[in-house]
Length: 356
Ligand SMILES: Cc1cc2nc3c(=O)[nH]c(=O)nc-3n(C[C@H](O)[C@H](O)[C@H](O)COP(=O)(O)O)c2cc1C
Image (cartoon, rainbow, N blue to C red; front, side):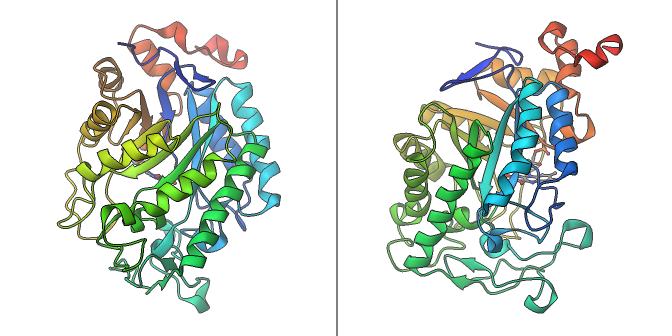
């Protein structure tokens, strides 16, 4: 079995190690456009030694932003600022990935440091869309517009256009966001999808949105580049989406050309009871990897070098993704390599060599 600092090859892309930076919204864009914040944020993490740096949930349509500050890729003007960042990431040995996303009924919210509640349409917000006219709840109580079938096709076309722009921006790793209670997950979960047409009801109908979107994106995303999906493996709520359904979905996604499943959880409903703790989502990555025979990424409360290394060595996942720990320490991969006796695996930028 490989270890954390062995390279990982997926399609034509080889990551220098198995540590990835998990996508993290920065809520720092103006009309979706990336800026110096994103260059420094993502660039620092490439310097720190991660093999893969995945850019935050990047909206495929303006109404698909969680907040007015979200990153976007719905217009050509978004491409060059992202390309600048990606050139920097690549120059420093990491692979640049992007998560393309639509926030569905959880869109139109204030940025977290302004409380995160839904914004009224006359206070900087907009009308949200979802599979069904069912609000999320709590302080995100806007009733979404239930998408018509034509409108569903329109959103899928937005994902396709976003994938093309991602390629133009130099990304070499594409992730569809189908987790955390955002639009694609809203189709999967019976708690948010109450449709009675071919997009709701049975398992086959609830997975139709993501399967069709995957199929359409696959046609424009090069066969030789990794194509991945993040799912919430369970809603942690009675009557919701669960790990058995996730395993079956992963099998179907594999036949549509998905190369890796990024295994997160939760986000569908505010009342979920989530047993957060070290490795709490790792068993999902392990089960999907084993039962759907597809590569997986493990994420969530992975903070210690030995812990991350054990996940790879035991074959629970092919890749570990770190979010908050990478915010605390962008040099986590370099520090972990030293701690695990693989110091040479993470080379410093030449400018920093005397301090390494
Ligand atoms: C500031 C912040 C922003 C996040 N934004 C996203 C996002 O854009 N897309 C996503 O799928 N998850 C997002 N997440 C979730 C993380 O990617 C990750 O799954 C989660 O934080 C658990 O990993 P951790 O314990 O290493 O932080 C975000 C988390 C944080 C802390």
